Image 1 (cartoon, helix red, strand yellow):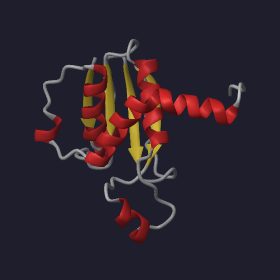
Image 2 (cartoon, rainbow, N blue to C red):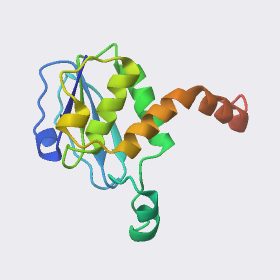
Image 3 (cartoon, helix red, strand yellow):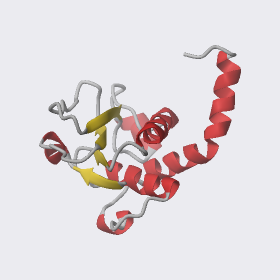
Image 4 (cartoon, rainbow, N blue to C red):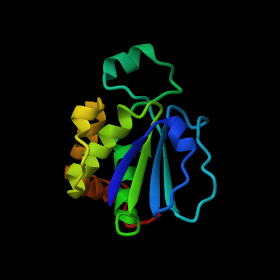
Length: 158
């Protein structure tokens, strides 16, 4: 599998010829990209968060309709990746500019899943280190999160 990073404009034009999945990142839930039907698209994960890595700035300067990348986003990415990695040839990750949020996720997924890449994510892009670290930390603490969730929810499964 390979990972490709796109900006919003290129993501809108996506017409894949290989089995793929898409992680679509926008600032808000209302700001989504509708992908044309394509039998090669095996799944789309839509996430909504700001490309922000300074929590203090976020708390004091940004409207409450926006949010930053959190553990729940990281878990969604990891679950999505686990369900898609054996089904697809390409994972497309897009954000608005394609230079910070999506490369951070790409870099973390390459590290987590040992995906070889010709791209040096930290040389060719400017990955959001907050997102990169949060995704790695969530992966390494995933079992702990699952145990906590089980204690909170009991034996019920949704």
